[in-house]
Length: 501
Ligand code: BES
Ligand code: MN
Ligand code: ZN
Image 1 (spheres, helix red, strand yellow):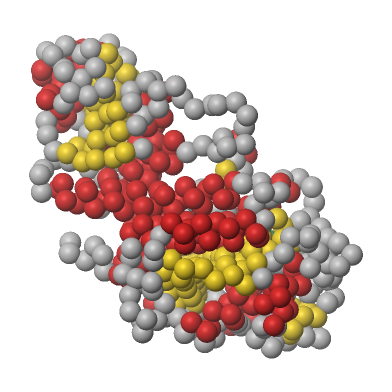
Image 2 (cartoon, rainbow, N blue to C red; image 1 turned 90 degrees about the horizontal axis):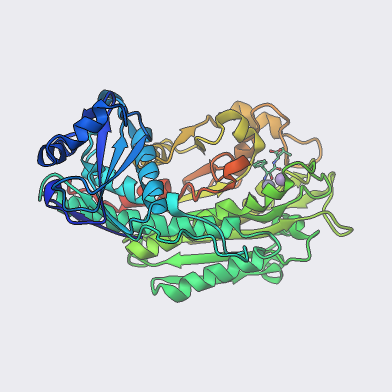
């Protein structure tokens, strides 16, 4: 979809549809008021008759409103004016886009960006609207044989801002929001792709394709042979039960001189996690195709980074692997020597993500990074702790943890910090090896992060557990593309892109 901003009064707009808000109970916003005046009370009359109360998410589509040059006017309920918050704002935008998409307006001028959302400026409102709009129109129909798209989909959206001065902010917001949406879209598509298509090789091909599209990107590929040379035995062990070769793709974005230390992202890319010999129960096992959402978030993020040409050196590692049971598969009881030299006793082959990540995290030491952030659908315990609403942040480096939490607040892509105290390290002691790959049921998200922390001593590191946020189950099943918005915000902040205001 195409977006633009302009500044002008509603009665002069000539468009397929103009979108204006109504607060509860039946209170016109300024813009709706202006339309009401030129239509000689047409809108207030309707409201008086009870056609629209103004509750958040209510909509009423009007045709040929007297003296209004646009074909349609879409009234959108915005709830109580004083209660309008971030979440409601995004829901209102989503409802608007869905309605427009289903009712044949191929373009629209939207005045909802003039609403007052506490603590947020025009930049935020326009960017969130772009992201929410793209989220709403997303579908994954590639593998259906019948076309399902709406007949007259919404193609063009103009956001109105109240003053000319705000146009620059609005344009920046569209640029950033569009780049973030492009990354989110890629992350969603790769995540939703079924595991018989999306295997480690597919993830590698996606990385190569990205690098062919953007001149700032370059890819290195590390397959099983190279992993064996590097003694990445833990990573290799996880993939041994699968016929699909384990492949790690390293995507480099050069946005600054070579002497600037890179920021590195490492994504867990289990294209299918059956649990291995410690096989999972059957219910919802199909959702374990989403166990590569860390990797797809890295792909999406690198796309956004390249689109915006962020002036930093950034490296994305896609750690592709498949966990299957097989005669050759690794077993509970095995002791593995990781690339770092530390040994690990495998207590459960379903705690495989950390075994792949630990070697990838050792591998990235060579880049002498400024910071390393890994992103992983690592623990079911994270879904129990935070549900689908927040990504878990774990870090031993307070400044980095704060930067990430701030970025999540700013981007409205929520994250919450969990502790990583030494006490939890005791849970993963092993009688036979340096550590076990499992800490028992209590604090499962934290003990998994404790495991990773033992491989990240040489740099500043944070771990994001996206087990709850990367995809939705049930009726709305599908990938979310999170945490691409939050990580983009982190990088924009690092690069000082928005420092002028
Ligand atoms: N990929 C799973 C974690 C997961 C499960 C994410 C369900 C989202 C939904 C991970 O590899 C796993 O199986 N973890 C185990 C660890 C346990 C064996 C210590 C888990 O969480 O049960
Ligand atoms: Mn597992
Ligand atoms: Zn897994």
